[in-house]
Length: 203
Image (cartoon, rainbow, N blue to C red; front, side, top):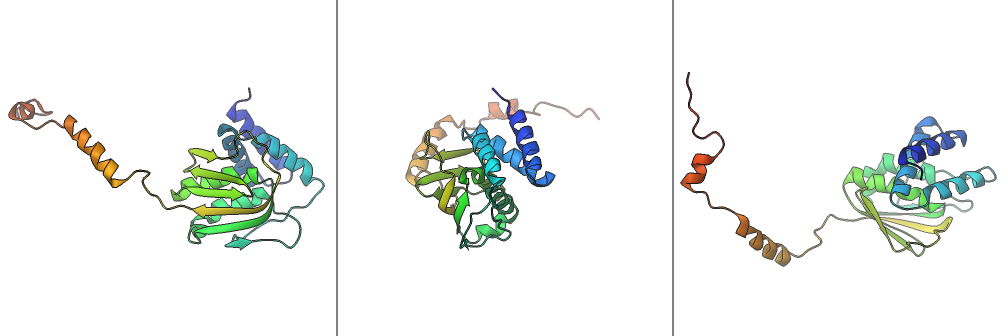
């Protein structure tokens, strides 16, 4: 089994050989490492994308807007991903954005996951019938487990979710009330045994 370090290094070098700058190649390496860590076939899709890239030109997005689409061709997931990280705080103000005709959308996911960590918000990502919940770059939940992820997404939607508790105020109060049973009432004997008690100043 290949280590995550090997995966990151090889993906980075392959990306440089595929024509990207060392800076972008390094970002790809980090993202493919994350993809494999979360259980997604990042190496497989990256390899397929670079083989296809030799025959086809993919369009790039420099400035990400609320709606991003092309009349023809498809978008490059790598440049989109790198620019998403760079612009994520501005894109967050849009609440939601979409991209039409994106090649190899799986390659975009780890970039979005890293963006989730930067802004401290969960992201809900969907492309066609696939849905992914990105949790602060700690995990990715999906309804597409053990299925073949498509190499072309007709439309990708990225939604920024508000941070909210997953429990009701009633549940929290009940649990907190139970936790109060561990609280110890302060007594004179506890005060005497507290840190620093009983020390004298000999100066």
